[in-house]
Image 1 (cartoon, helix red, strand yellow):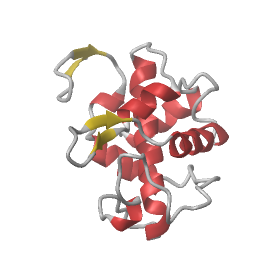
Image 2 (tube, one colour):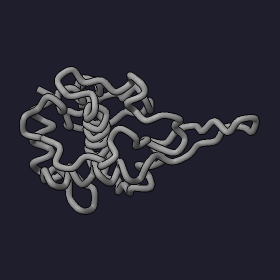
Image 3 (cartoon, rainbow, N blue to C red):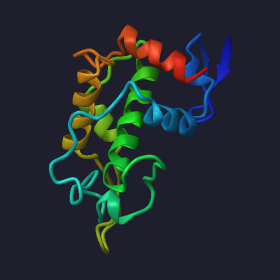
Image 4 (cartoon, rainbow, N blue to C red):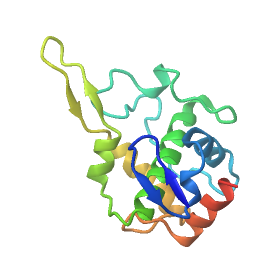
Length: 159
């Protein structure tokens, strides 16, 4: 099946169901799934930022909201689900991914006052803990590729 992805404009010839579902819908279904639970959350969950370009922690903003989770862990669950979706897409494309590349993806523009803004990387600590949770659930391998169990979960969530 030829599926057009909106974000990059490229045409992907794949049978992977990840391209047919809305990313927001996939993330919500991943969070609501009973087979995946967070094993490790950041120690300083209320204070940690998602990158040094951010001015506040995710709890200070309302951008991370999940209906069925406590407010303290909802932002980390959303980040973990988003990271898993990225790894599924990269695995399907046959591309290797590194933590540095994920830091670039989840980075943002830093406000440097009167100097021009520049792109800074996301938090390695948050990405590392999300990867640890996915590895503990046996959804990804050591080389950040998705396992058979992970692909089965994707197929079940996309139905």
